[in-house]
Image (cartoon, rainbow, N blue to C red):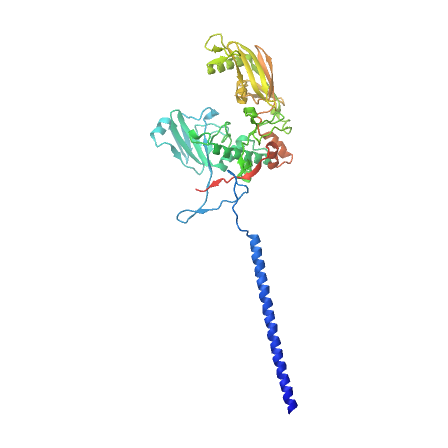
Length: 467
């Protein structure tokens, strides 16, 4: 009996010990599970912190953003979501031939209707007359361009002035560029060259908006070579693609927009803005050897200008000045009949480091004068009504400007002046034909731009602004 009790007591103790061990094991398991769960949650939190960093404010440079970023929508006072409005550019439209910004009358056509406005009619109506944007654009039938009567996107503003009507086309910046690039560079050019052109054109346009040079006319730019040719040729598929693939991209130095100059064909080297009289070249412009475009027709040319043509131009310069100053500072009365009857001498007096003529001395019987501006020199030696022979033998009719300021002269006094020149355009910034040759050789547009401009970066300008 005593043994039986002892056996049952031992069995009970063992059961108690077993139950205690089971409880201890479950507690350990639950604790390990909690620790694992806490560690998993901690890892998830750390991963979320890596994927979604806390936002920090970055001090942006003026005018551009250092990194491209999307512009988010905002809300108006009523809580409705509003999309930012695209930045607009205001373009002053010149008349046919780009002679004047004043129009005696304007004929527009849209939605199947045609309307003509005269200065008196516009003055009688609410001024300015505003024609809102039309789905198929607004055609101006009183203007002729290379494409015929141009059609404009955006709105058209007609202002009456004492000198005639002013036409201002307001439209989104990127839409404007779609009509600038094909007007400034052949649409058949390589895609990377077209992209380089699009970036230059956008940079130039943004800089002009900043500077407000045509504020007195209520515009940012005009549509002529004085700024950028716009609407001379309608948008083309290749150029529109180039504009859209570089949307918002501009050239900057230290966060500031540069003057992204460009021209047709180099003389074998590019120039800086010293050609226009700058005491010191802009830090982003550089004179570089440019052999990429030296097989182009405009890389070399010649033209003969009659002596009589230059004699008459010299007389006009003296008459416009009202008097001429001789080396001894003697004032000459240009109304005297013998004045300007004879052109005595024509001499190049100065060239810049890229060999562009920046000084021309003209002597007549009625007085002498010096031309020191690149544009004035090219205008005085204009080959208008003369035949220019290009490098490949092609003959073309000359225009209102000498093709470039990179030239030499052979003076046959009393008969003619033979001018042998190189390149087409002012020679500052990017050569368009060189850019095309570079693109054909495999250069991409950032490399092309880096070749022609010093210490610049392609950055993103926000083409949208909060409305």
